[in-house]
Every structure is written in C-alpha cells, then in structure tokens.
Image (cartoon, rainbow, N blue to C red; front, top):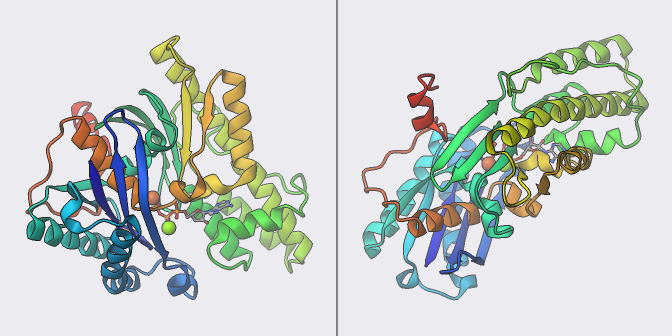
Length: 356
Ligand code: ATP
Ligand code: MG
Ligand code: FE
C-alpha cells in the first residue's frame, strides 16, 4: 500500500509518500518538510494565525513535490492521511480539508490521524520494533511517556503537569536573551559552562507518579539569573549548563520509574524491551546519552530514530495510516472534524474515568 501523508498541526508544513510492504517493512518514497521557523522567530514562539496562513500558502506545492519526487500520480495511491489533532486548529483545518478534497476527488479512503500516534509508530518504520515498547515524546508541545501496546492501543503513563520540556528550554533561552528556538542555543551555550555553579532543583524527585514537571525549574533559573545579573557570556553559559544538568537528572529519575513499571508489567519479554525517544528535544546530546546509559543499565534497548523523523514530519502520518490499514482498522468519513485536543489514549482514559 502507498499512502500520501499530510502534517500541518504546528509550525511544520509537510507532505510525504510512504509504502508499507506485506512483511511489515516500510519505504519512504518522498519526505518534504517546510519549517516555518523564520516566520515565527521574530515573535519568540509559534503564532497560530501566521502558521495557518503559511500552511495554506505552501501545502499544495509541497504535495505536488512529494508526488513528483516519488514518481507517482494521485491515481496510484491507496489512501490519503492527514493529522487531525492535537494541534493548532487553523493548521489542522488546512491539512485535513486538503486531504478530504483529494480523497473525495479521487475516491480514496481518508485517514484522520492523531499526531501522537504518528510519533508513537515511527520506530516500527525505522527499526521494525515489535510491540510492546515505551515511547518518550519530548517536543515543544508535548512531554509524555506512552506505552505502545499495539496499533491503536496506547496508554499514557506520564505527562507534564505544567510546561513541555521543549517549552522549558525555549523559556529559559528567552530569559537569558538567547534567540528562538531555545533548545539548540541552550545546548550550545552549555557546552562552555560550569554545570555545578548553580544548584537547581530536581522536580518531582521521589514522587511515585510517572509525570514530569518543569516550571519550578524555570523559576529557579529566573532567580539564579536575577541574582547573577548583569549576566556575562560566562554567566549565561554556566546557567545553561546547570539547567541542562538539572533537566537530565529529572528525566533520568522520571524515566527510570517507567522502565521499572514496564519490567514489572511485562516480566521477561522474549526480546530486549525498548525505549524510543521522539520530539525535537531528542536532538539534545546530553539527554540522549544519559537516557541511553540508563537504558543500558536496566537492560533496555535505546531507540532514537533519525532526527528528521523525530521532529514533525508527514512520513509518520502516512505510516500510521498504513499501519492502521494493515491492521484492518477502518478509514474515516469525510465528515470527520479536526480536534485541537485529542489524547492518544482517550478510550483507556474514559475506561478508568479520568479523561482530559
Ligand atoms: P509538537 O510538540 O507538536 O511535536 P514542536 O514543533 O513544538 O511540535 P518539535 O519540532 O518536535 O516540536 O521540537 C521543537 C522543540 O525542540 C523546541 O522547543 C526546541 O527548543 C527543542 N529542541 C530542539 N533542539 C534541541 C536541543 N538540542 N536541545 C534541547 N531542546 C531542543
Ligand atoms: Mg516544530
Ligand atoms: Fe510533534
């Protein structure tokens, strides 16, 4: 099966063509991503109206290019897939409407895909991973630990109770006068800093839940910055290094609990269990290395798909649809609506009675 995927939930406009073979392997036929970073940089964050407009302007051209690079026509595809949530509603409408129009015009099935499901299933394309496995999603908008049991079968084990991790990096950068997006800037500056100069708290240390929290850390950074003001280049580097160290420690501690719970839940599985990381923050070297170490110590495989497929892209949306199709799940009607909020495990949440 060959699927056209469309992604417009945040600040990336993307289109891709993906094939899934009968043996469960996949092939990326084309993968086009237009990042709107420049459009938003001046505002220090993503501006929803600007994002929606940029999606409208770019999407048609990107789809044409994706088809062109794959060397196939619309008639050759088996389905059209678009992200229909969660995300910024303006962008979601643009992508989903475009997908509906193509599906209707060509008489192809439509798949309305949950963006988080795209992130969750990517490792099956890149690493042929078997279920179950754990996914740590750390991006600008999400910080979640998800148990991936099967296609369409997810359980959210932990989430942030305040800021997303990428957001914490971005806000820290802003506070220190570093440009947006802050993550790469903080990492660069931290490389020349003394991580032990400021002692910052480790949020939720010892807490039995599997959740995350970063806003207390942000406050501690603000106080440290105020106390050290006016900030020299070295002060900034020291704060960045201390912040990155605190983040790494809290992640280690939080993630370790999930690995333990996985082991308790599944006992000895036939394969070495896996932790997959995804999201833009997975680009951070210190975070990657510390999680990789942790996995090694606990007997887990550490899987980090190539960065291009960790951040927002349309390959993962097409692939999620291909997996749904292969597992006999139905396509969506042309009346399906985009949803700004859409928890990945909403059925599970409803079952245990605490849906968001
Ligand atoms: P979504 O949350 O919907 O997936 P997003 O666009 O916010 O979308 P990504 O594009 O996956 O998320 O990631 C962007 C985030 O990753 C930003 O917050 C950015 O600061 C952070 N980031 C990128 N590189 C690094 C890095 N090297 N270290 C830390 N954070 C990083
Ligand atoms: Mg992005
Ligand atoms: Fe994403």
